[in-house]
Image 1 (cartoon, helix red, strand yellow):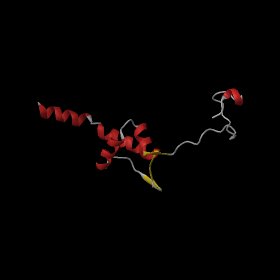
Image 2 (cartoon, helix red, strand yellow):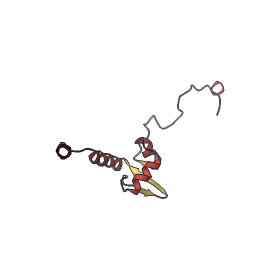
Image 3 (cartoon, one colour):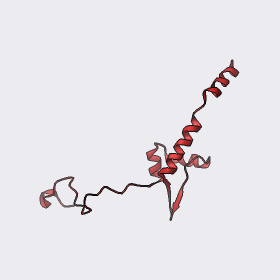
Image 4 (tube, helix red, strand yellow):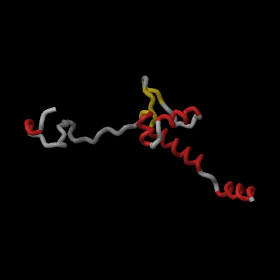
Length: 97
């Protein structure tokens, strides 16, 4: 990489000729990207996969990807599975007494 003293370029200035258009947004994530985004380890992801609790996956060539829609659905399913209704919680307390 050329030194800025030689090229005269300022640090952080892009020479992209794309007209300043914003970068194309990602529409799907790889498994490591999904795990990083959801703060879980890849080992835990594969543990969930054995239990059939992972988001829908799609194969593109040899790559496995998770769409953002599938990730959103997965988060909603996990949230619903982790919440208990007050009636069930109250019924459990009554049985314990």
